[in-house]
Image: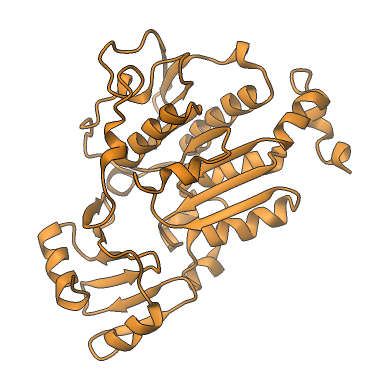
Length: 337
């Protein structure tokens, strides 16, 4: 049965049976289950990776379906968290892969347990803040980090290995952000597929013991205007606080009382509480808002502009504004400290 499922992969000389056995003993963490993350999950589970741990803080919306391949219209109707919807689809693809699904936010406080027992971390995120938490966590625990980013028709990818390559912080400044996101300038699905396929290919090389053929570059491309460049991963920066000084600055932040603008989403995430009892908050908010509860979240529509999405882990999405002061005002009015 195993040989039949993976027969074409076993015929590929660099993998064969020995490589397949290594894949089945491997564990991968995928952070973010949007465009990149869903393609990554699909490839890894079909390839036969033994354990896949997935985490995402969001739920499925109609605009996701253009490029996020694991979801469908039924997931949108049920407002399923992406981690829940993804696990359901992935188990139907390969029931032998163990899927650990977590609805939540990656923070400096929970990154250590998320990395426990993991062989490679895959970047499916859409923001640099989370990427630097992953980068610092990986280099702290000596775990390779498969980085990828995509917007419009452009993409970039690199595979970072502690003690063998520089880290993400050596190549990209934490403040580096040109303001362009998929929600502001769009994205085409083929660019997503290319970045995630590059991420998965380098990861499979590593997991099957084919490190000698790792690309060891930061690859960037624009498939619309047919450009592609490779920047060699040379020596780390001498004063890098992550891979050289081992200070790990992104791991010193706290999740609570944190306000995060979800770029291009017209949404501010506020994570101030450790937990929220959804049944309790349904009763509290019903007199002032139109409320809908699912097993995974609570949606409260206050007027034509502002709405809340509450999660059991204490997060609240204030939708309808990107102004943190406005979002905090609404949050304090109805959720409080």
